[in-house]
Image 1 (cartoon, rainbow, N blue to C red):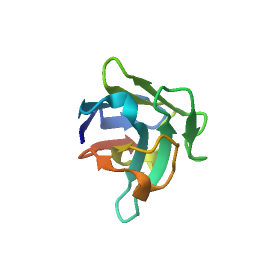
Image 2 (cartoon, one colour):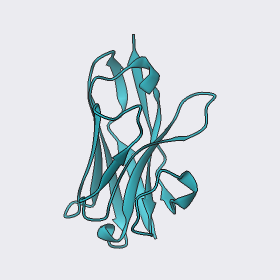
Image 3 (tube, one colour):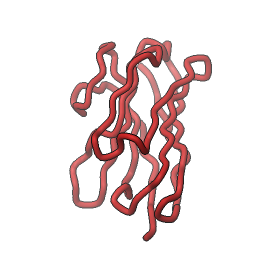
Length: 124
């Protein structure tokens, strides 16, 4: 089992940047592909980005491609989401997930562990 804790959310103006951090503890971090998802008020949770176990492969939702970057540091048991050129539509609670299967996935139900989320609010 792995425990996940997100941090780094906050209030930022339109066009600003934030970096989210997801710290993992428990089993060997490099055993897991990792993903970021988000949920806006009144909407379902949606995929944002995913990264393979050793960081070689990444994939992004079209809505964030070119603005967000996912990365990981297995020595620090941490995955990051660098978010640039933020827009009000990016406002949501952001969650990181850990996936025991090594393949990347945009599907929420393929992730085995979740953090509690961190709020990101982008003001216009």
